[in-house]
Image (tube, rainbow, N blue to C red; front, side, top):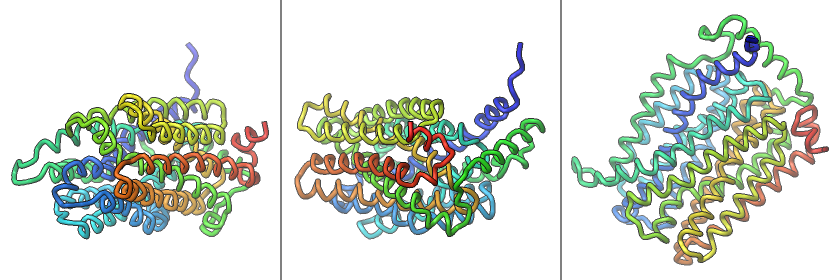
Length: 437
């Protein structure tokens, strides 16, 4: 029997070590970010929050996220991922639990802003962390495996949140308060564990055999040297035009994604009339389908070395699903359309993040990735706000869904334009070569 190559053993060991734990952290982070969508089924009525107020409060999370994203990722690059990721998790968990003290619009806005500030830097920190551990050829798949945690937050979190809402009245707490309390606690525990479990770089990994450690260090060095046009400084990372275009593309898909996810439970409840528990169960289905599609798309992107076309196709699928969901069709057809939208929206992410990591390095990667993610996540403020405003203005979600569809379509167009216009940034990478084929 032929021995498995050192490189394959090293990558497999890193996957087994890092991805399950980091995906668990992201599962909790994403759940704490979007569980307000399920809390709204009770909280809006309990606190007299209109759809517009809820949309702004759901989205204001991303203003705090935006303001602290770049500083957070820059500090991570300086102090190491282990300590900084642990700090992020502990603080966001405490803030999430404190959401039980919300009493009206102002406190809702304030706590959502603080939650965004607390979580700022986590996702781009992981994207940066993966550039220390996974060569470019393996990165989209690794990011997809990690990112499926956001789908798991919908698959598991939806029925869990529905069940927690049923605790209404227990220990003098509302169901939505139980939701925030129970779902915030794991983040604190995981933050403590991260201090002992994570390793900053391969050369410090005692859990890697020496030959695998050497192979991985050499592979990452070759990966860095293979990039022809590399933005390595803070200035280069912030001023590179391709970074700004990619940020614009991410902004549009995030506008669609969070407008969709924050209002999905309310949309399903509106056209189905089901109970909170049933809505939680049904809402898990689009996320389950999206999780399977995300891994499949990312694996195909890695296998072919093509990124641009995969990103554009996902944007088009999302736009189609959202457009069909905005039609006044019977509930089963609208639910199928929402599932299609979820597939496009969430499969977009892994091949997209393989684009900036192809030309950003060092401090340029720390601030460039954070900038793209920070600007992109401002769409998390706009999307829910659009849905809330349109719901208050028209009495339904149809116009809002059409606007989200337009944003998803434009996101793919902008990413394609970026890879074609800024060819030097992607020179020597599979993305660039495939653009010419």
